[in-house]
Length: 315
Image (cartoon, rainbow, N blue to C red):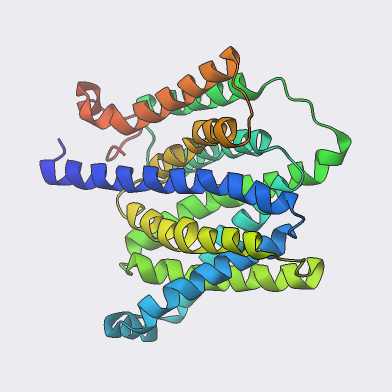
């Protein structure tokens, strides 16, 4: 049975992760506005994460214990943070920006909701984080809700580049969820350092690629304001909270919470972009939310005391 202290810690981590998903959901509306103004997608993403890194840099550089921690990095730690930066930022976020320049937000959201399935299969095969029957039910309910919400889909030939970018994003997102939790739970590094270093590496690489391949585009005051907000609040603050939550949440849990972005994006699009919701779409949203709650709350129910699906500690 989980202790009250452990339950409270877990609840705080869930609350932090949900706040982050809300901020990230608002990002999709802002990103769409920026892309509609012809901001080059990779450069746009690179600017966002490079500026966010610059926001976090003083917090690391001005704290003696953080500076000492960075100086004590082993070669393995540097390699792990470089890998996290490339996977979590350059590949995952870069691919999502590119995909959003071709695909509707709803289509990309649907595809990203398959990340929990990939993570669950990995957890089963590795036996590091066994997935219980209850969590499998929540995952399947979440996917069913996504399918109800979006199907049938009509994909035009011109959307193929966006689908390929989305596929890269789904795979990279799954890998980054697993690898990110490994680093945050095993390295014992401060989440701020993990976020700043990996984001700086991934953001600078992405910005360099964007400038070389797409140029800077023409930025007006509104676009700079969007980039600034995305960098400071929706990135620097949000990713720090997310990395902190990963110290407590499992990869499957964090990915399912990330899946709540599906209904949040739909609601925000309805409010700010005028995209209506019909009965089928509302039913899909209910399924997704129900699946998320099942995965998060199962540990507090009597069934959580039963034998898990795989041998070992329950998740």
